Length: 192
Image (cartoon, rainbow, N blue to C red):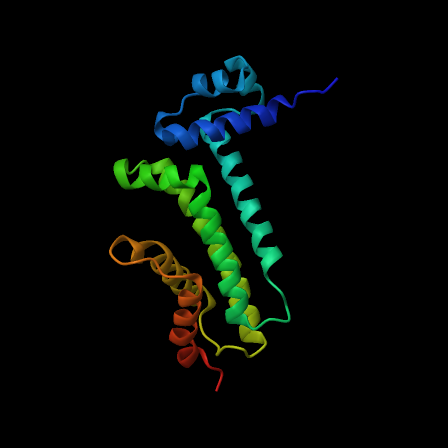
């Protein structure tokens, strides 16, 4: 007989609810219905909706960390590693239903909890990038500079080219983005 992991069932149902209705419109009653459990069952695992949402975000960030660890290879040049990992992260972000809904909710309603959740995801990406930038500086693949500032600019550049650009222009292919970012950054980042 297969045992049911009620906690995971609640998490999966909550993620589905947040993805369908957004943070603001999701209620514990909806999550209980989707999970096919009593509302009290949810409270045995999570104190409130915020804690449940936090658990889901933690899982998303862990997935993103796993994705980047799989794409980074120490023997590749910095820009190639960053391009592959950023490409994988942005693809994950664009395909993940909950993150898409949170972006919509922030744009349409400005829900503070949705905005905070997206900020946590962005912070995790920036922390990853900062470590990669610091490593590249230590290996003298790029010139010494503020790794936090560089990471922020790099992330915004990728987001702009993969998402914002497409709103008014034909989509860029991954190789076009890679080439542009490489050319754009190389002269300013060259260690010599």
